Length: 455
Image (tube, rainbow, N blue to C red; front, side):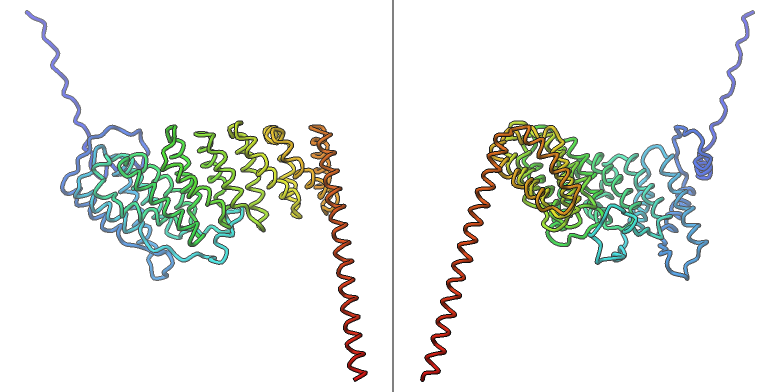
């Protein structure tokens, strides 16, 4: 008799992925399972009901608003986030369309006027002094998380009808928010859209450029320039070599003019990174970049001068050595003006630049041209500068320059003495000439008075 086969064990029934089970799974933070989730019609209606409630907007400043309703909305937003995070596959359009509409309603709102418009662009290092935190952030944060999940997990072609040009322009306008948390979320979201929605890249670059140009030449007031430059830093990093003409124009017409605004300190770190990325891609652009920065050098803003001296030092390290001789004179001329500054921080930062080996190497290649300028600046500091530390640093740099070429340094000193002697002689002649004119005028006045009395 044949052996009896074991009867197959009935497989356990998979637990139904109900909406409540989905919420519980996310709240318990269990390991994510690859669930093929399909919502029933009743569950779709429940999601639509949650979405509809989340379109209710709270200002968090109106005393008539109910705190319990605010908490309920946050709970419902969190439930929607659970659906988006754990749902595999695209959402149906009957849910996706109202969901995107709800997200737009929450995000695209009128921003409050600047809390301190008079000092909006006089930004210093401490961002806390000018940051204003949105009272609605407890809701906005979840809304941004939902949108980021949608953009990350959904096919761009499915979202194309919802994430369109007006949507992207509205997102870009939110970079004006004073809340740094919102700008950080926007930066990550906008960058993610740029990476995934390749068919929008040209439009997104142009839109950001329009914001920069409006900022540079119209308002000089925008809180999100630093975040937009961070996005651009990543974009530039992905450029292929040789660079396209479009990208070079962006460098010359946008990045370099961004050095001229009075609030440059707020975004200088990101700006310097973008410029250095261009220089690393094509070192021959060094001449355009250095001359552009020198063209927008500040006259009275000492803090900007300190930042720009540091940027020039970084640029020297990436310059094409073939351009050293061409750039040595204009760069050393500006640095000499800075070391003669009455602001000790500017003067000291300019003098410390002479500790950079590459800068000294660049100067040595055009030593005959730059020494007359630099030596005169050194001697002015030693004679007239009020700061003892600046005079000491100047003496150290002078010793180094004399070691480079003592004969040329002495010749420059003699030329300075000769110019001063000639200037003194000219001044003496000018004074003597004026004395003769004044004496002649006095005689004429006396003779005229005598003539009037005799008549």
